[in-house]
Image (tube, rainbow, N blue to C red; front, side):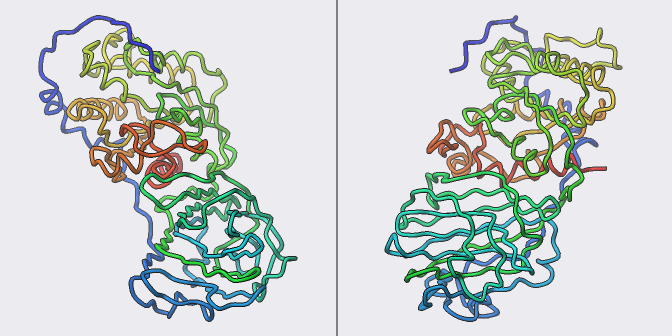
Length: 457
């Protein structure tokens, strides 16, 4: 629970929040807020009709029926059927792949699964199931995929699961860094994450999707296959870089300490030091997380390559709901003596001045969070406008999730699907207040945006 904020001092509002929005509306798209290029869609197949080539390119054991693709249909033990991807897919250095999967295998002694492999047969990712276990892995022997004997089985992690459910597999594949970031979750409204992590893979490209009847019988169904190439991949440019992260619970991760900045750092093999705290504010709110300025002051003096921070989420509450301080205005010039630290604006400029003084050569990236259904909308717009204005003044790069993604938790369906309050199975759940992005929101909306901002020249 967040502690009740202490009152700093009340401000009489010289003008309404709406007036503030109007006064700074011209900076809603500031020079620092560069739009991110969207992903290139390479495959988007829902199997509502027969595909071209037929059956998604599987030569045997496959059939499109009932709005899904069935594979390992009528196949024998240790047999395979291989769908090959075209040259455009094989040539990509970074890919995002999502698909729904289910197995009808009925015995714990039987096993069917899918494998993703490169042109040399090296493993990219594998998923399989028995009647009681979900199995997944990213390492194992190379295979020509002409058969699926036990000797060529991938090394798989095993977890208990319900074979009657469908599962969504979400993968971020980086063939420059040889990493795969994976999430497997149930396909339902209140989705449960079964596993999520980042691992080193042996594959060097995505060339084949292999349907494997490892032993026994069990038709697998595949649906909603979506394969995209990110619009602004880092392509290894961030490998080994250091990043300090500041801000509130959206950076920290709320009750799950692996927030979006962790996902970004894992993907790019960056070294992350996270100073963010739940309940933090930019302004003098007296909240349990303190001010972001305190985080910066207490951070290591050694300069990182990058600083990533957010702020404003709790400030909206402090300003609109509790009227603890005013938004304020950007100061003339860069003299800290001119910053009104009793306002949001002056506090933000103090944070940036402190960062610039402490780490003059470090690249600073501000993350503008998604459209929040849990906070007053006009106050969000006012703080956003002011923040973009200040970032432009201080030469701060903006990773604009607000503008460059479609995540909007004012839409109740998005609130339910993409935010969480509590953990389920050790991972973020669903049905949250609209504030804290869960893993589905991080992978779909958050992680690509700071990656693009960090990778800018």
